[in-house]
Image 1 (cartoon, helix red, strand yellow):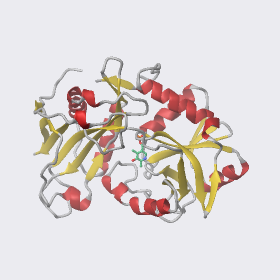
Image 2 (image 1 turned 90 degrees about the vertical axis):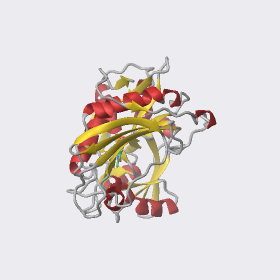
Image 3 (image 1 turned 180 degrees about the vertical axis):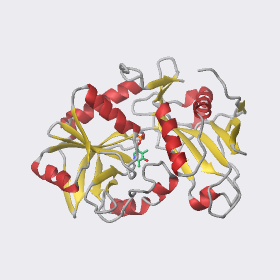
Length: 354
Ligand SMILES: *Cc1c(COP(=O)(O)O)cnc(C)c1O
């Protein structure tokens, strides 16, 4: 791609990289040396810049803080053989960011602002991409309203940014999840399909209650009847019943996950039977009881594939077969990891070299 965007670069004069233990990375607490910013003013994106990562000043009247007009993305880069950045499906993140922007009355973000911003940022922070197994550079693009106005209306000014965080594995063990039948993450007509900040603020309390009972995460159900499975925490959820891969079909209340889409594409490519449809809680619980449900996992960028160890429902815990026995989820995890690291063929053209 031709460099079209004029980006001003102010490099850090003191890299923090030497202080980081790259063999022992926590998730989301360490940030690379630089960040990318762009301002939306008078109806146009401008002032493209890379500056040292650090705190910034915003008005106390910023609507993003008060009303949550704020959206984000998450994607990962892996280190290639020659130190290049291998980025997984960034165009899909860019497209989804615009779906979120539209729902939240935020401006369209042009492709070159996202891609050239990211390309340039990765050029400066390339050495922050970890190479050890299970680690990668988590990329967080986000956009927030930046008016100085506390009335409730769509803003006119916005800021788009990208920050990078070298990360290790998200979950270190298979996860314990509980089927939530009271609280709701998202409803038809709501904002669940957008990666909008407020969706996550509202999900913390029910997740906390489950964590107090020893679970890692919830399985969210539909907001109307709590009879149908939707997502697991901040991941899409997938099941294997009798060798068929089953996952809830997309709608307003389900985030259109890129990992979900990738798993479905690989499954079809391998000739595995796939069903995208409504998945009832009753069916999942029956499958746990009669052994027809052999695998369950969350799918998302941060965790990739998170094996589900057990599912709690109405005060009872149901265990799934041991992780070593799960043919499909182990195969898909290996294949995705291989593609992302440039070690396996990429039949769908998912990887971009930055
Ligand atoms: C980000 C996210 C996912 C996973 O999407 P990916 O594109 O695979 O990372 C799933 N559910 C929710 C609620 C999310 O926020």
